Amino acid sequence: MNYRECVKYLADLGQELHGLKFGLGPISQIVVELGYPHERYPTAIVAGTNGKGSTCAMLASILQRAGYRTGLYTSPHLVRVNERIRVNGAEVSDQDFAIAFTEVAATVERLARENKLEKTPSFFEFLTAAAFLHFRKADVQFAVLEVGMGGRLDATNVTDPRVALITNVDYDHVDFLGSTLAAIAAEKAGVIKPHRAVISGVEDPEAAAVIRRRAQESEAELLEMAKLAQITGLHGVQGRYAFDLAIDQEHFAGLSSPLLGKFQVKNMAAAVAAVWRLAQDGFEIPRRCILQGLGAAAWPGRLEPILRRPLVLLDGAHNPAAARALATFIREELPGRRLRVVYASMRDKAMGEISEILFPLAEEVYLTRPEVARAAAPEEIQAALQFRPAALRVEPEPVRALERACVASSPDDVVLVVGSLFLVGAIKKAQREGTLQLPGLSGGAAPQPA
Image (cartoon, rainbow, N blue to C red; front, side, top):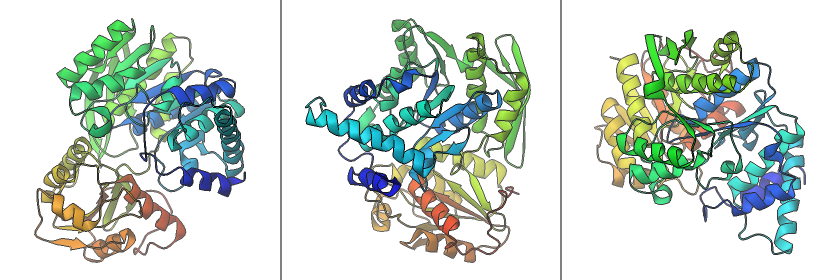
């Protein structure tokens, strides 16, 4: 198949949650037939409710600066599926994606003909297998894997990671992972493997107890960030933070993030803890590479500025925990500035609770809908609202909603595009194609928040 045929093949499988049934059976059968590509390189796996992508990006960037040819597998993508599979920061090419995906598809079809598959692999399982295979073909020396959902039965979890990370546990995907923090933590704790190290940023006592119990049962080395790491000298400049970090007897001075938000401090600390633990296993990661890797890390769609005046920020916060972190950023870093919100959501998200967190901060809210089957219509969002702003606008087309919000804003105002990565993806696609008409918008360096 060529690239377009591969993308169509994926689309025909349906979106990622369509008919989702957790289980490692299909991916396990596929990787066996492919020759165990995921065992050809060491891995790190990152689970958690929020912060997974940022932490993965930082960890991969550090490893790359240390001289390791590094694979990075993340989800979802914003514009093109190639974004999910990267080697040394570069997206997989169309040709290489087609080569890996075609081999996976052929393997799946052969297994199906031989009645060796317990069920048809999902969209995510196809891509995970393609990522494993591409990383082998690309001769990566390390791969960083972001869990898609949960952990225990996620397709990425067929790997035996040299280190696992669990960033946090909060409410999201409750229909799949459970309605209590203990149940959700149990799913995420599935990435803990026997006699391997796990770094936990989980702070909720109930969830942390589940992580500890799983680590004990697995005889895994549990490193809890609350006990292991000490952050000092924390200070921010225009929304970006720097600090010193002590881990055990080691000190890492002058760590700084190119990403906006104080919440990124915990993600940075977790990434540094991971490379610190990898170094104990013999990986050579000089201190300068940690500083350089953090400084070069990029993670689109998370408090990403695309315009300065008015300040336009794209953020994929789609659950209450992420919304709370975002609200804190707005209060602390953008005090006194008028805010307009462009909001969209998937139907399965906590729209009412998120409205209570973010909408009181806004002068106007624009409800919109990306072209995704799971997306809620503006009318559905209105019905779910637990806080109704005085100025509520409906603009079904996301690009038009952002343009309207910017026209209504003064140069010192802020426009926040939030609620779904699909919404962020729609805006970034329009920006890339030149169909987003905002005065002063360009493809140059990202503007500062102030």
